[in-house]
Image (cartoon, rainbow, N blue to C red; front, side):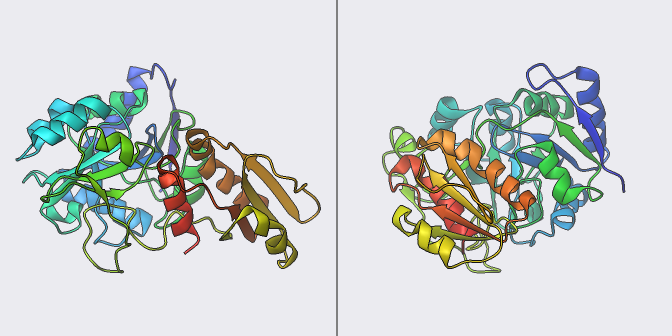
Length: 331
C-alpha cells in the first residue's frame, strides 16, 4: 500500500481535498488527520471492520480503546444513550477542544472499538481540518494517535509518515498541531468522575465545573481492560532511551553515558551543546513546553540520539500532562 499525502490550508481547508479524504474513510479506509492535540489515525467508529484496521496498522493491543471523534456536542449527545448534566456542562465549557468524555457506549459503536467495555470515549476536536473532515463524513470517526503503538505521538504529517508510511491509505497534512499533547480524559460512568489521562485541560479547570473529580494515579496492567487510551505504564516513548533527572543531576547523567545524548531542559540551563551532546531548552511555561515536547523528542530521535536525558518538570497541576507523558516514556 502506498500512503497518499494530501495537503490543505490548516485554517480554511479546501473542500474538494477534504471530500477526497472523507471518501476514503467512508469506504472503510484509514486517514491520518490533524487535531489540535496530535495527529489521529481515523477510521469509521461505527464500522467494526474499518476500525479494526487501526489496530493492525498501529500494532495496537485489542484491549486499548479508541476515542470516537464527532463534529459537535449535539452529535455526541445524539450518539450516547445516556448523556448527563455533567457531560453537558463539560462539553459546553471545553468543546471543541482537548477534552475526551467517557460515557455509556452507544449500540452504534462496536464493543471492540471500546476495548471490550460498555463505555465509549468521545470528543469534539478544535481544529478546522478535523472538523471539516468530520462534517464531510457525517459519522463518528475513531482516531487514536497516528503512530505505532506505544511510540511518540505525531504532531506533524512527517511524523505520521515516519511510523505509518505504507500502512495506511492517506495522510491529511494540516500543519503542526497547536496543543501537542493528547486530550484530557474524564470518565463520567461511575459515581465519582475520574480523570483517566491528564491533558492540557487541568484538573483545576475540570474541578471548577465538577468539584468531586479525582485523578486516577495508577497505570493499568498489561491486558487489563481500560476505559481510556494512554493508561499503559510504558507509552509515548521515543526510540532513544529516555531518563528523567532533576536539574542538578543532568551533568552527571551526561558524564556517565556514551553515544549521542540529547538533553531537554525546562527553561535555559548552563549546559552547552558539544560533540556528543545536544542540549534543547524548552519553555518554562507549561503550555508552551507541552506544545513543543513531542516535536523535540522526534527531532532528537532523527539526530540519532541513543539517550535522551530530560529534566523533571514542576509538580504543579498545569504540568500534569507533560509529567505523565515523560514518566510513561521513561518507564
